[in-house]
Length: 344
Ligand code: PEP
Ligand code: MN
Image (spheres, rainbow, N blue to C red):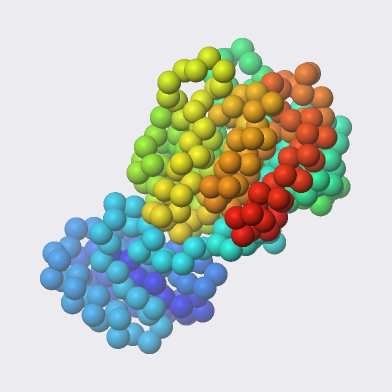
């Protein structure tokens, strides 16, 4: 069961809900703070009649918006928890609901100050609202570039300062979460770590927005259950990101672009969903058409790899757009967004 209370409720009011829940037999009552509502997630097995009695009691309290006996396996991320679309604010930029589309762009990996700053300037000029760049890269091969690690985080912080774009970077282990959270605005969990439950809990303990990519072979329910870990741990600022899944090898793309999950996910959850057209295609000539299809399908934003010199990139050069290609894509994104009633 979960209880939604007004965002301006006092500590005493929160404690009242928690105490009542514990007295009724729930083992945990985890608080997740939103802007307009606070959700208290009551966890534990309690007989249904006792839940119904508690629900009635909670509903009579003036600061309670609603008390819900959850029926979905992903209870806090499901639409019954929050029937309206909800937006996540990323350092002043809102994503989701009816907000303008948010385009996040930048290199796969942070390589140097020059590479990052020149990329940041180019993507900002073209209309990107956030800068991406990996400092810790979860590479399939041990022998591939693994990222600049903390130095990469420092470069992201400098680029943020110099260019004025909020930043996104991937975090690959629970121990690194506090360090990474010090340097960037938004944490990303990659496809390889969608099911890393210790990591999901660790980002759930921060107050940073989290972009949660779909596991490359995960079902939609598994993906939402992973999001639930973050929200249930206390951080409701989760943005889902589709990035292609393993399917039939066609010999031309890295993954199968899972554009159909955009409307599926929108039906199941109020959380924003964005699309990464770079990793499923693996080929910069295919990035734009797939990105535009995602916008047409209702994505709340895009996450696109762009590199000032993709032919010499240390990671994912083949799928990285040249800055001029990114600017051309942005012009088309504006047109397609307008056709489906959105702005950029
Ligand atoms: C990335 O965004 O650079 C990345 C590694 O993506 P994914 O986890 O989707 O492969
Ligand atoms: Mn990449």
